Image (cartoon, rainbow, N blue to C red; front, side, top):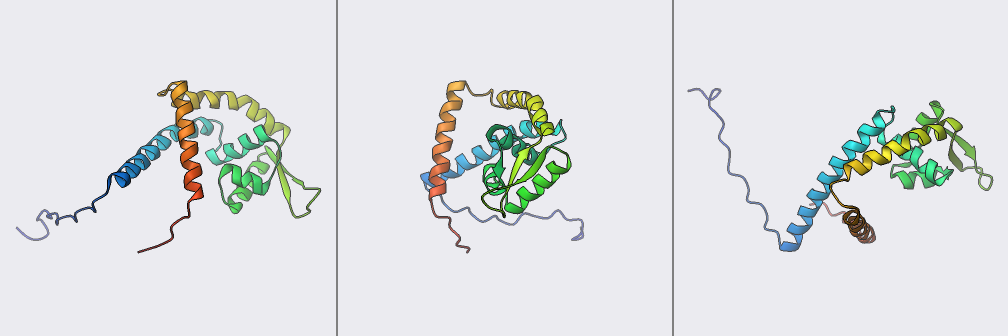
Length: 170
């Protein structure tokens, strides 16, 4: 048998590093959290796609719908995108007639993003169905379990945010 037709043999894999119980528990939670996020996000993305929107575009519209006009920097922090990303999203939504920019009277350099009448009508029409889609995706937990999970995840997020980020690269 020639080398080209021989089935390659698997070289022995390196033995994984031994984890202590705290590390193993944290890694397991991270995987479960990531998989749960992915599963629920599929529902959210499919729902907004029915209306020709991306999840990021919907995030901008939803923030403006529920909070009102926001400075672009505030909007950026609400929807968790970069400053260039929020500019790009507002540009796209502005071209579609859902969002407009307005000058900030206190700071000529700053601009507000605000919903247009068409943007407000769109959100009034699609948001109730979106809320139902999210509720459907979360239906594996009781309302009480959702409240407990929200409290735990809020605590986790705040604690992680307060920690310094390790930038050590080996």
